[in-house]
Image: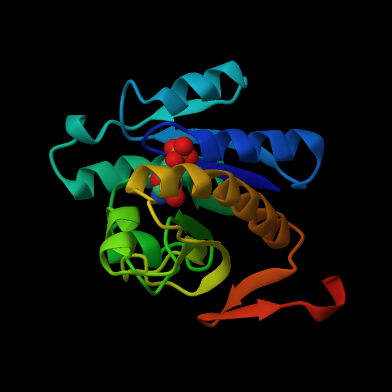
Length: 203
Ligand code: GRF
């Protein structure tokens, strides 16, 4: 019942997952944390938590294909049940994603399908949205376009800035990712033939 968490930065979602695995809220262990950026704060956090760390530095690979070869070799060796992209900032190729169908999830800071890609808080404000949020979705070759499993919402308030939105959203993201990962690990939710399947009896 292993998980691999992939990160590029701060690692606050990783921390939430690690605490939930430790407390039993998620019935799983984190087998390793994979990071593509040396010096990422999340790597320090992983070390403090005593988690195995694998650094696969994108800059030290000549191409995305080389990088994905290293990444794939690491993942194949670990053979996790799920791979969680928690602030992992690289776009993965269709071949890479298709080789792991229904086994990768991503947390994205918007109410998908609104605001795929970067700078979601600024874009939600500029669009005049009245609400904002985060989504956890299965990863497919379409960037931030895979089936959405769960969402957390918040109201946008007058005077909100990208920073205030990000600050209010982050704790909701942590909760959402923990709850959703627990649903996956208990096999309450899974992807079957491209569709989300919910086991009613487990709900
Ligand atoms: C989160 O906002 C996540 O939704 C986005 O990147 C951020 C990662 O934060 N994809 P952290 O590294 O988990 O603190």
